Image 1 (spheres, rainbow, N blue to C red):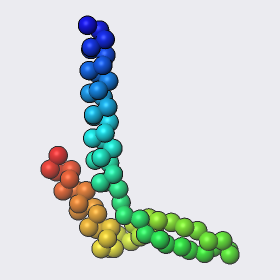
Image 2: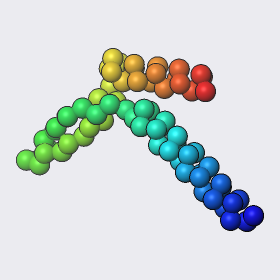
Image 3: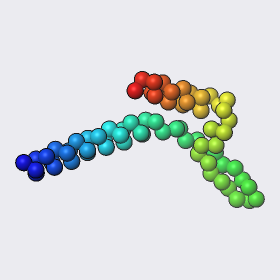
Image 4: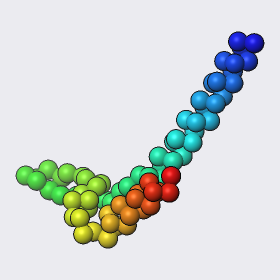
Length: 72
């Protein structure tokens, strides 16, 4: 009886973790290839566009996140 409970619990936890991974992948912010050079050293920052609060890509992502939060 304990064995069945353990197996059922493990299976349930596996399903929950898969759903969390699936949900978190869809919430990722889009990456952009942005390179800036400082003192002859290239710095790559995929999320630099987020510093501009008027950027349309960033604003759309924020609105999408807000919608997902309200609908959950």
